[in-house]
Length: 274
Image (cartoon, rainbow, N blue to C red; front, side, top):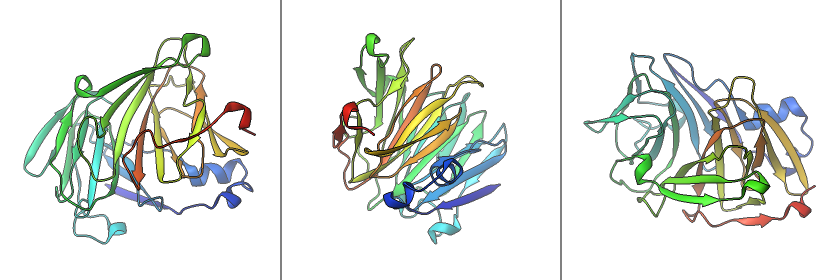
């Protein structure tokens, strides 16, 4: 079963007027992972698409998606898939890929239908592409690893870059995930914006009762979303994206836009936030 929800872009002046329910309706992606279903959110932020596929031991096929008006979803797109569950398989282009928890699979433009199987919980990201590039399965051991932060600032974390120029080539999709040391809860502080690229977060690995307070909005007009396990957040180019959790968590970040330069950020000091 396939379901697709469309999200339109929001002007920052409109976001300033939003209450909690409206903010959540536009920027929070919930209920992405449902057994036996593929659920997608098609956005008008660089036509980025995110979603989840949970085969639950059966077979799910992602092929034609009416919103793209193409014969197959990947006819003019590339895709990054992260397995956040148990072992599973993804098949595309005549090749079967076995994904363990934490593995990332890149599929290039023109890969055809994508089949999901096994017990995986597959997080799907996709962006338009301009040329076909080779598929690649990237294990955690092959990611580019960065250690940042300090215990005293509660932000010691490991950034693992998968779909990234230091690891492999893509058209515009950049993806990785960040995990925290025990006792650390803060992500992406000092905050930043990058007007040339949108970004999406998926928070996972939270305890059932745990939450992340995700900060968003213009630097001088900040807002927040309370986010639970396996929920996503859309971050427009004009918005900061930062947050802190009530317990340990991991978040997947994925970006699309004008470039693939991970360091293309305009930092905002904490003293400048309002």
